[in-house]
Image (spheres, helix red, strand yellow):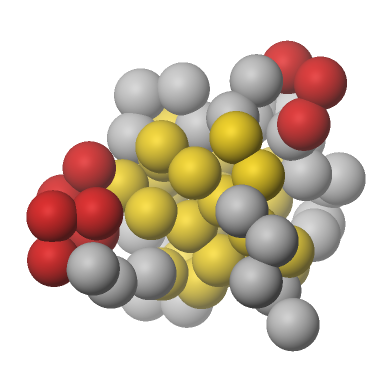
Length: 64
């Protein structure tokens, strides 16, 4: 996978499916998958949890 560093120029497109890591995921070596909301800049996973792109997410990749 191609890791994308998080900054304003590399945000996903609205509705794009992505895999991402939070600080906790990085510690355990796990990734989560969700859909990006560009208007509010968060990723929602299927369980309904929301992860803020600037406060929670440390890296993301396009979902294959």
